[in-house]
Amino acid sequence: MAQLDLRPLSLGEILDRTFSLYRRHFMLFLGITAIPNLLVLAYNLATTMMTKFPVAPVPVPTQQLQARAPSGLFPLGFGGAILVGLIYWVVYLFAQGGTVYAVSELYLGRTTTIRECLGRVRGQILNLMFVTLFNLLAIMGAFIFLILPGIYVACRLVTCVPAALLEDLGPRSSLERSFKLTKDNAGRAFIIFLLYFILLYAAILLFMFPFLFMVGLTAKQPEMMRIWLAMAQVGNVVAAILVGPFLTIATAVYYYDLRVRKEAFDLQLMMNPSGNMPSGPAGVPHTLS
Image 1 (cartoon, rainbow, N blue to C red):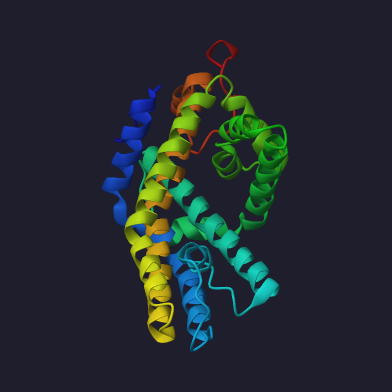
Image 2 (cartoon, helix red, strand yellow):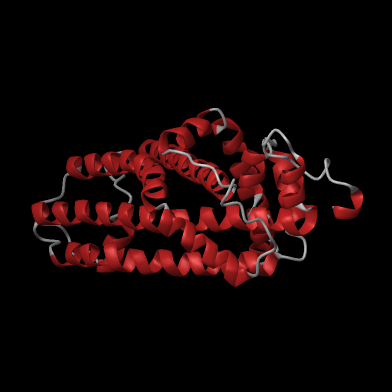
């Protein structure tokens, strides 16, 4: 554990450590995110190739084409939407869970591989599905009371996935754990979310929008339109692969920072002779918790 450096971090240090981890282990995080997303890309490309465009299509505003282009679902209807939704969900969970495990190993000074990280997620998929479902329901319930409460709840639940994976907690316990850890720290989570969405939309603008623009220009040429739609699918996945790890890495680093601040996690780790991941503050004297 020569690289172990657990200490309270400022927001700037959390972001700096996030970018540093991503840069130094770029191929690891890229592989964890890319492998599941390539399955989604293959599905979307297949549905795009099967789409039958009219020879003389009725003119459609470019904005409508842009809204429809990324889905790749128009030949499959409602059933296809449900199927691809499940695919996206499972892909997201594998990418997020694998990234959390990778950050945990690297952050604690150990080494890991793409195969090991994704392999550890397989046994946690069902639990992660319920964790993310409960998380979504809690945020949607808060949004009913206006936008700001929804954003606040999202920021308080940002560490529920790392808590579920690294402490082996169930859906309800992981949400309660995140809410406890992020008490008085929602502002930092908001900045992490804000920066993530800025990066995501910048990547979409760079890698996807040019192809969607060409879709609008070739609306009367079905074959060319099909090609540009396929390229838009590729650009969409490229943006997701490149930007996706940032949020998960930042969330995992933020999770460790909160545990160091509130539970003296660095001391827990030093007091643990087995080198295993200590979960929760139980093993720490009360004066250090």
